[in-house]
Structure formats: C-alpha cells, structure tokens
Image (cartoon, rainbow, N blue to C red; front, side, top):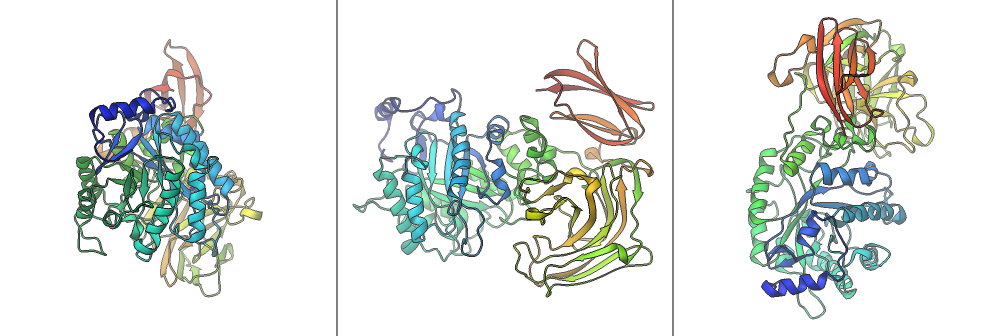
Length: 634
C-alpha cells in the first residue's frame, strides 16, 4: 500500500479487497474497528478509519528471556488482564536477544530459540484472537551484527516463525528495539541492517506496518527520517514508522537531546515534517533505571503532546522483575495471588506507582491507595522481640575477598555493619550481608525491625533452598531506602518473593527459615560503594504469645476507626484487621449464613476462591466492634 493518495474510493476498494483474506476478529476490538494499519504521510491510519489517524495505547511486556522473570507473564491471564482490565488496544511482546552471549547466556532467542518462540507465539496468537493489535518486537541492542541480521531475516520471513503473521492485519513488526548508544551508527550499521530486513520482509509479500529503530536507544528518529531505508531502486520503503523511546525523567519533552541542540519535542516534529509517522514503542516514568524517583509531571507533558498528534505508544513493562518500572509490587504479584481473577491484576493496592500511572493512563480509573503514615503496611496484633544477644548468633556473607565488612553487636543489642563493596565474578555482585540465626516459625504475620543508614535488603533464608537454586532465596521486594533517622519497617511474609522464581520455585515456609540476613548492595550497588547500617528491635509480628501492638493507617487523612479495625474486599481476597479476637460471618443475599470463620487479633488475608460467584454480605466482629460489607465474587 502507498503512504499517500489513498483516500475516498481508494480506501473503500482496498478495504473490500482486504476482506477476502482478513481473519475474523473480536467484533468490538480495535482491529475490527480500524482494520489493517498503514503509513499515510506522517500519520498511521486504518483501512476502516476513513482516512483519520489511528492512535493506539497499551503495555509492553518485558524481555522474553528464558532465564529472566518476565517470561512468566507470557500467559493468557496476563494478556486478558491487559485487554479486559487495563483496556489495551495494542500489546508489545519483546522477543529478547542476548545482549552479550559471549559474556553471559541469559536465555535469549539466539541461544534458546524454541523456548522464546513458543512464549511469543502463544501470547501473540491469543492477543490476535482477542482483537487487539500486537507489536512483535525484535528486542535487541546489537541487531546489526551479521549473525543477528541473518537471524532477524529468518525470524521475520519464515512462515513457521513470525512470517506466519506477515499479512495479518493485527500485527506490527518492530525490527530493532534499541541500537545501543551513539556507537551504533545509522549510515554504516543500522541503516544497512534495516534495509536488509525490510527488503526481505517486503520480498515475501508481507505488507505489515514496520517500526524502524534508530541510534542512541531509539531516541533519534530524525536520523532515519533524514536518510530513510531504501529499496533496490533507491526509493524509501513504504509503510514505515520511526521508533521513539522516552523515559520522562531523562528525556524531558522540552529539554534538548544531549547529542544534538534540539529538544525532544522538535525531533519528533522534524520526523513528521519529513512525512514519516512516529510510533513510541517504549516509554516509562523515570530515567529507565531500576530505581525511583519518577517524573509523572514530565510524563503528563509527553502524553498531552502525543495525544495532540495522534501518536501511538506502549508503556514498559507488564511484569514483576524487581524494577521500579514493573507494573506490580513483588509482594502483590498477581501471579502469586491465584489464576483467573481479574481483580488481582487491576487492584491499585497491588501496583507500583509506575503501574498505577499506566493503569490510570489507559483506563481513566482512580488509583488512590491507602497506606500507613510511613508507607509500610499497618499492623494490629501481637509481636515478640527477637533479641540480638550475641555475636555468636551471626554469620557473614561476603562473595569475594576484596569486599570488606566490619560488623558487631553492641551491648544493648544493636547491630552495626560497615562495608566497602567490590566487583566479583557473580552476576549480582557486589554485595555483603550479615545474618541472624534464629527461630521465626511463630512469626505468623511477618518481621519488623528498626534501622538507620544505607539502603539494604532483608532475606529470610530457608533450609530447603539449595542445589541448583541455592542462591534464589526469598527477599523483601519493597525497597528499603537509606534513612538518616531511626525508621521502623513492617514486612509481611507475602512481601518476600524469589527474585529468579526458582526452577521450580520453592514455597515459602517460615518453619524452615534458618537465617534472617541483611544485605547491602544486593543487585543495586556498584563497585567501590561504601556505607554503614544499624539495626535494632527485630520483632516477630503475629507471635501468639507476644505483646499487643497497633499501628493505625492514615487512610488518606480520614479518621482511623476502632483502633484500625477494618474489613474490605480485594478481588477474591477478604482483608480483615482486628484489634481483638473475633470472627467473620458470610451470608448470601437471602440472609442464610454461608460460613463462619474464627479469627485471632491481627491482620488476615482470606481467599474466597472456593465460594461460587455471586453477591454476599460479610459481617466482621471483634468485641463491641462490628462492620458489614458487600462482597461481589466475579
């Protein structure tokens, strides 16, 4: 199809012709509504859009690598949640290519083609069947090497691989995620790669819209717009859009690109002035790092701009891998909450701040969440102290001889740890840690402690995590940042997740925890980093023989009720907080009692998966306090 002069009757004729080979799609989905997409001048239009520009919004998944946690989200539950709950019109699925397989094999497509292809094919076929657009993303930083060029051509043209979607109206090909840095030059590396891959795709008769990557992590779409990929006759290929990626803290709309004296806004406008469309196939709310802070105000500016120009975009990333740009928190990972429950994927309480921004951007729904005053979960119940009584109870974890650690326990039971980190031979070095050997089997709710000093990570290390996955202990997935003053944290057991997910994952069992270990630098620090932490008042939360404590949430400045007692639904999980022993009674709408559950004082999360779908009334009571809520199980 041509990019220009396709209007009126021509659009109608093309649409009618396409109907003979266009598969059936979900009747009210975006593919059924707009049809095949193509570049018309500097806009992306659809065969059914009447010449109007089509703007699509949706998520990007994480790298598909066999050894990385993002692979677990390549499932129908996640795809359905993005469509039904997050209102995605387009989903980007990155087929991960190892960044440097000579140094380390991370299980990318180049070293595990079957595993990665099966994951990509599975979710792509499912998303197509649901009637949304799909970006099949060749997610590489060094795609232009000769071996990767040949591999990409085979992938996009082979009828048993991505070639099976070559003329599918739902599928967009992104042929190069991010040419790495400025070293990936357009004229001698990225352009020849693009011409070879696009030429091979077009030679097969495939007319998909193609997204073209560009230098400096796809932040220079003006470069290919000035010097576009051309066919054997020297003419620019048809049906191309230039990729653009932004991370709002690092790439502010009105600030200048570091490599050129123009703002990012102007770079986009330059591409449009050269009569090519732009597709923002990846973006985020921070600086593309694994850490906060976010820049939501700058992100808002970007989307006002993109909306004004009808530019489509996909937001990074629908996964839980320990990154600030994950959609969900590790402690409320929807994969750990049970399959088939849409609310587990759409409850703002389960999301990171970044995830809440994306959810609100896609749905327009409120994402207000309730937290305690210090940002850690509220706790009402019994606790008992785990004393730091002796240096004999501590053991050291230091991965190499050049990392140094000086530690001790004071007479009044305060742990002090000084460290200086250095790079070792393992993937996640440098790090160091000190562990307390003790029995936490009576800690029903979780662990609490008070600290000050450097950021760190707590790991409860189980005796049954060994062998092949001996490194893969559960760890606290909520960031514990640096603190100048003494700061108390309360960590429920569900916050502790396995980073690598295990193979298979090892169930959490507090009776098998032998060591609580505080780590510094775990997956975050750099060689040469040094600091100090103090830890005191380590508590077992939920010990039935402990003393009574109650920490009430601020509830967004609303008055706390009855010592913080509450009952509410989150998907199919009934969350109850009691200041005294009590119970819940569940009734159907005719008033018949369905169930009674006796509860001890404290916080409880009770899954209702065994109840039939329908409406119920839940009455919680403890002492003189009682509260009723309506419960709808979908």
